[in-house]
Length: 195
Image (cartoon, rainbow, N blue to C red):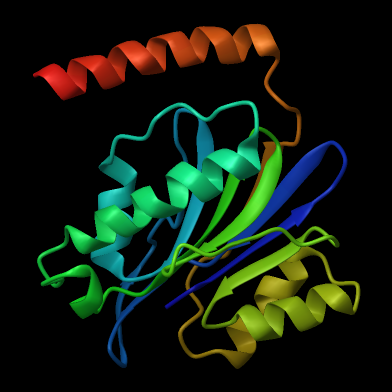
């Protein structure tokens, strides 16, 4: 598993995450990047490693100006579609892939679960993965994301390795940037559909 934490501030979103990958009860890889800045949004995935890898290389439509609506109506179902397409899944009802994600879209943070649930927290604090409870408690007590991740890594056996922190702008894309992006996104979607 893993721990990924995000805290929203007016100008920036701070994301901290570990780099330990496990296979059952064994540490299988130390140094795994678990948060990716994709073309139009940032995503951090906790859970199934094959799913996390598939997300890095999947095609996603360009977000609309309403980040929450796009996440609920497009991104959450698209993530489920990716999970259902993995070899371990026989069908949506018989899929063993479990995951959760923190997404940052147009300056907004949301958590997405493997049942297509989308959550926005009023306090701007988010944590997913096996160490999430430790991290949320630490954030509630006033810890930074880095401090909360360190606490989670000391308490949760599935959180560890190098600890990383990145900042993502909380600035919303301008309507002009969105229009251009949506135009190119539409052309890409049309190409993918007709190839």
